Image (cartoon, rainbow, N blue to C red; front, side, top):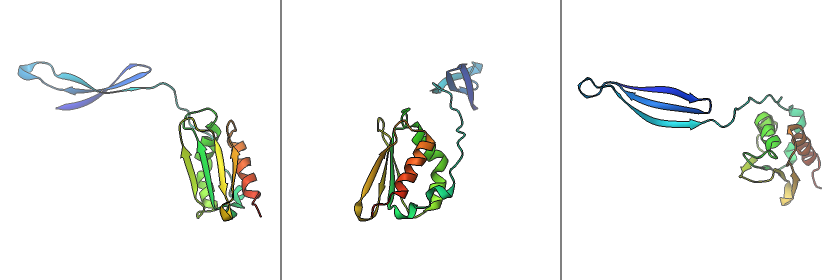
Length: 146
């Protein structure tokens, strides 16, 4: 009989052991370590209120939105929080507008908006919180080039 046993050896380490019951001639079963996972930080749930649909009223004039961010840096944390809390609302406001999310380690947080005739505008989002990212997005959406 094979049985997986979860063993907590310390507060930072969790191991899964596979215990095989019964050996040859009544000997005790063998234990084989099959997985070790280290936990370096505690994850906290995000409590960010999603944006309203009214924030994206001029989004139909934008051809494409492109977010550049780092997955782990503190500077891109506001962009990550904004996308996690407001992506559904953003897509619901204009389902036909592509919203591209480009993640790369060490990348600086930026937002590109592409308008008609290939005109692009860029805003740096590095170090902003979720509300700052929302304000930059509203500025880009409202400043459609003529």
